[in-house]
Image (tube, rainbow, N blue to C red; front, side):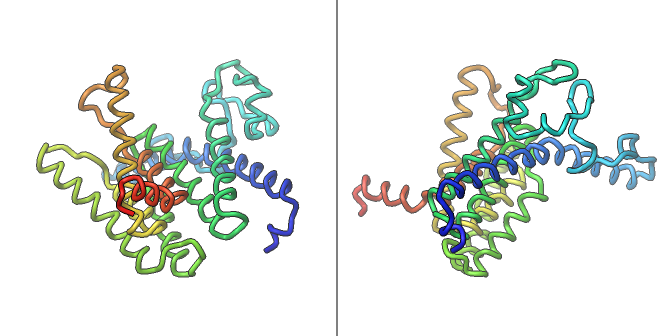
Length: 290
């Protein structure tokens, strides 16, 4: 393989730089995609009601336009200030024009994206599956951040993740589940959370999660197969329960207030993808079942 023939320091450096660049793009997706969806829904509602579109719809707004700019003073950001992590450090975490504080989310997402790429390479080596895991990890990172901020899991991210998982399985990429396991995983992921949703709705007359969670579970099932799916959902449930309990105990989350499940589902799926076999083996060994 070409990567295996390159010096290791070059491969690792390239992966880190790629991860930082991807992280910078993920920040754009995290910030802009919910706004793009909101504008589209407003335009569709106006069209349905035969009204003029909102004034915000008259200017192009997507992942490429307009240029990145300060959220406080609307000053365009200079290209060298947009360099992943480096730009944030050069500016001291403040806008060069107005001095307003820049959200720490930007460098954190960039560092996280680089770290996820490094973990994928370290775990699976310079192989196609490592690239697949990195891409899945980046998409999960974006979805977790969006859901945490907006309680929204966009179809524009969950559905491509689902189809890519089924495609990787169909192509027989080493590391991916067999096609049958991927299809059953996708179906059981969606159906399992849908049944939990219906049971909770009947018991409490409240919606315990959104349909985006079902789609994300289906996408995870396509990538990890049905055998690893229970581990992913269990890890997600434990993580959500622990963090939710801690937030309520500290007064940062009111009792009965909604808390997004997507970030924990993303984390559980990622853990199952990275180390599912290791975790299950350790559990079976410690429990005396193996």
